[in-house]
Amino acid sequence: MRASSLLSESLAVLGKELTSELRSRVALNAVGLFALTTLIAVAYQIGPYKIEEADRPHLLSALLWIILFFGATSGLARVFVKEEDARTAKTLRLAARPLAVFFGKLGFNLILLLGLESLVVPLYCALMSYTVESVAGLALVMACGAVAMAASSTMVAAIIARASGSGTLFAILTVPLALPLLVVLIQGTKAAATSAALAAVFPALRAIVSLAGVTLVAAVYLFPVVWHD
Amino acid sequence: MTERKRSPWWPWVLFAWMALVIWAAFFYAPAAKGFKGESARIVFFHVPQAWVAVLAFCVNLIASLRYLRRRDLVDDARAAAAARLGLVFSVLATVTGSLFAKVMWGSFWNWDPREVSIAILLLVYAAYFALRESIPDDERRASLSSSYAVLAFVTMPFLVFVVPRIYWSLHPDTLINARGSIDMESRMFQVLMGALAGFTGLFSWLYTLDVRLARVGLKRRQSEES
Image (cartoon, rainbow over all chains, first blue to last red; front, side):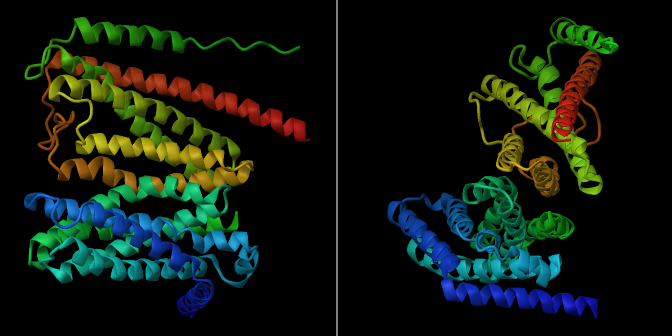
């Protein structure tokens, strides 16, 4: 009963987020255009032939995650910042329990990140001639990476929304938390690009899932404090 | 009439101990084999500084968790004091590590996993203070920075302890290596243990001073408000 009402409340918050985003499209435009601009700049300056064949799997994986990460940081903070800007946070506090708000916002950021990955990854592969041996492996790394990144960035978004100077603070607070994750995501993407065996991505995947797990557990404990203070 | 408190004796003992550690690091411990010249003597300063940086991070976490449970601003002052000292000792560990890297490997920075982990620890401390600076209200500052400290702490063990063991590293074996043994000449080991104790004592003293100052500031503000 309790779990199902938490789920329905979370889905209601997610529905509200999607409706308001489809109305304004601010986060969609910010994330999409930022990622596309970075992708074009990288593809134009580096292109498919300027990197040595031996260095391609590692460097192209690193560049892909840099594009995705910087595209994501431009829009992920909005879920909470917009509530404070529009002065709707108090109403939301009354309407839903803290965990439902967290999971609803997390769901929205996850959808945003998965959308960003589905837009950028095929374009990146085409523009940079990036061949991936294990598409299933890459999909797993991308999906788990999106969950881990959404968990930490949603929590940081909640923190910075309650502080002043939100926009710049988000990048400052997210980068140190995201760096360990980016290291393993790059390793996982490189493994998927070089090996057709799905098992090649498992070591990186274990680390990504562990990071996502501990971040989610910490967020569940901390979010009510941040949201109500 | 207020009675003036006598200053404690133990900072003088600490001063003498640190002087002894510095003397022993240069004149008692022998030069390590397999390192260029006398470069390995930096271990007596670099390792304790890195240890204190991590210890400060743990103290910051404990004080942050205590603040979240008890809502006492003194706990927040404890967390901030530990982070301030952690930042200073991280910078010192980075500088001494870079000097060693220049002598041994030819460049100040090599993107070794351990160098990356200390760089990220520095970034976490810097982000923690950037967050604190941006919040004028005491209680909100305390609760948000405590939450960020806990969130950062859950990713740090992964970075400090797991990543350097997964990737190939230029860094010499840690004090207790992967084989679970201590490979160090006994006099060097004695000096290193002495340095660890000395630096931990130095951290405790500076931390106590910082927390006392913060307590006085809090009391003064409370009396002004009432």
